[in-house]
Image 1 (tube, rainbow, N blue to C red):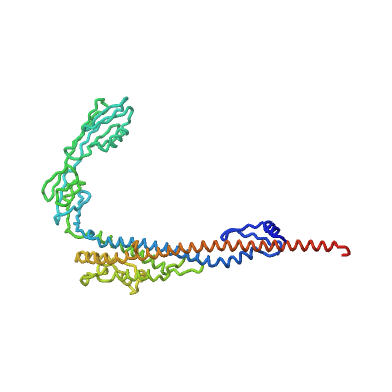
Image 2 (spheres, helix red, strand yellow):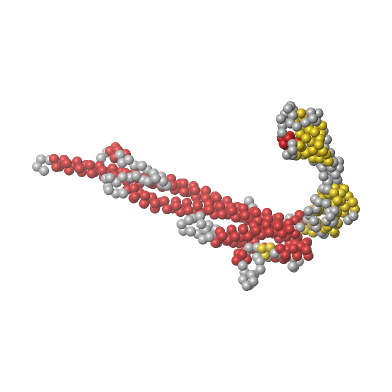
Length: 466
C-alpha cells in the first residue's frame, strides 16, 4: 500500500489527542481489537511518575515556605514585644494620685507633685451663663447676632432646626437647646463668671424670658481658698489636676493622696505580659510544625518535621530566659528574678503541661515586690535581656536573617523545579503524540491488510472451479 493510502487511513481514524493532564485519549482499535487508549495511558503513567515526583517536591517546598513565612512574621512581632520590654521610657517615674470621693473630686497627676495628702472642699461648681428665649418661626428670613456672631433664622424654620444650626457652628460661642414648650435655651460654651449670652434680634422672633449669669468654681485646699472659671483646676495642688464634679458642703472635704515617684507597675506588667503571650504563641506554633510527621499521600504535610534549625532556635530562646545578664548582681540578673518563668510545680509536685512545653508565665507578685525593692535592678535586667533576646530573634526573622535565606533558596529551587516540570511535560506530550501516531499507523496497516485479504479471498472464491 502507498504512503498516501496509509496517511488517508490514519486520518480516517478520527484521533483526538489530549494533554497529559486532562481529557481522555481516543485511539480506536477497530482493526486490531486492542484497547489502544488504555495501553497508551498505562505507558504514559510510567513516564509521568518522575514528573509527579518533582511536582510533589515542589508542593512540599511551597508549603514549607508558607509555614516559614508564618513563623517569620510571628518572630517579628515577638522581637517588637521584646524591644518594648527593654524600652527605657517604660521606667519613666510617675506619681499615683487617688481621691477618696471621685463623685465630687477627681484627681490625676501631671509631674512634680508634692507627696502627701490634701483636703479639698468644694462650695460651688463653675457653670456657664444661660438665657431662655421664646421662639417664633419667621415668615421671611431673619438676621440675628449672638455674642457678636451673625446667624439667619430661615423662613418657616422650626425651633429644633434653628438650635441644630447654632450647634453646628464650630466657631460659635453658645450652645442651643430646643424645649418642648417651643423655647430655646442658649448656654455659653465657656464656664465662669465672665461667660455671657447676648442676643440681638431686630425681627423680634426671639423674646427673652429668663437669664442666669455664669459663676466660678469656689473651693479650698487645706483651708486655702481658691476659685476657677473652669471645673478643671490645675493650680490648686502643684503637679496635680483636679476635676470638680460635686460640692462637699454636706459630705465634708475629699482627701487627695499623692504618692512618691515610681515606675508604673501596670505599664511594665502589661509590656511583659504582651511579650509572654507572643512568646508562648511562637513556641506553640513552632512545636506544632516540628511535631507534624510527613505523609505518604500529602507532600505538604510535615515539611518542617524535626527541623534542626528551628529546634536550635527554640533551645536558644528558652536558654536565654534563664541566662544571667552580663555584669548583673546575683538575685537581680535573670528574667526569673522578676517573675518570668515556666511556672512552679503543681501541688502534687508534677510539672504542668504548659511548663513542660516551655510556655512562660509572669508572677505579678514577684514583679511588684521587685519593683518596690529594686526598680533599678528590674530595669537593668530587662534592658540587658531585651538587647540579647531581640538580637537572637532578629538573626532569624530579619529580611537578611536565616529564615529569609532559607525561603529565598527554596523559592529558587521551586522555580527550577517548575522549569524542569515544564520541560518534561513538553517531552511527555511529544512522547504521547508519537505513541498515538504509532498505534494509528498500526491500525491503518492492519485495516489495509484485512481489506486486501478480504479482496483476495473474494477473488479466489470467484475463480472458475472453486
